[in-house]
Length: 180
Image (cartoon, helix red, strand yellow):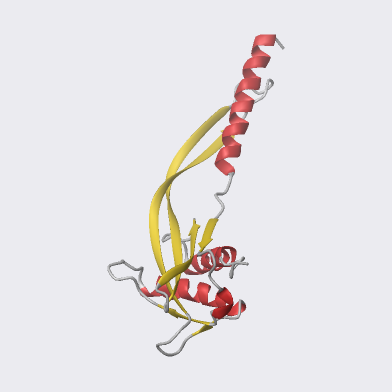
């Protein structure tokens, strides 16, 4: 095999392998949290859902799915959903759906014996949803904990897939709650 041809095929193979590796990586959910320094989380035993005035919330089904995912995690941590007006924590959430480009690469053939290979890349737009969860101390009227989970909500996914993504994201988001 002539040296120049070998180098050419090697470059094509490496380029295709890199493109395929980048395209096939599944975007993982990312979480970030922050808490008020000095807040005593051992004082919080109950919580209540509140709504931020002026915020657009998703439809009732998605709202229930979000609250169920958070309620399950907080219950596992020993917090109880308050039934009355009083609670140790007020909790709210907000969601944001943005667009992201996803690249899919396909290839066939390749190698010295079979001639040159062909590779194509196609882009598609996917929705990327971020959920922000905030907790307030009603007595001090201060934000005491805040968390963000990205790649959590996909309006195009089935109901069971959305719930699975929400459950996984809230488990990841609230993993280290309450903060030490």
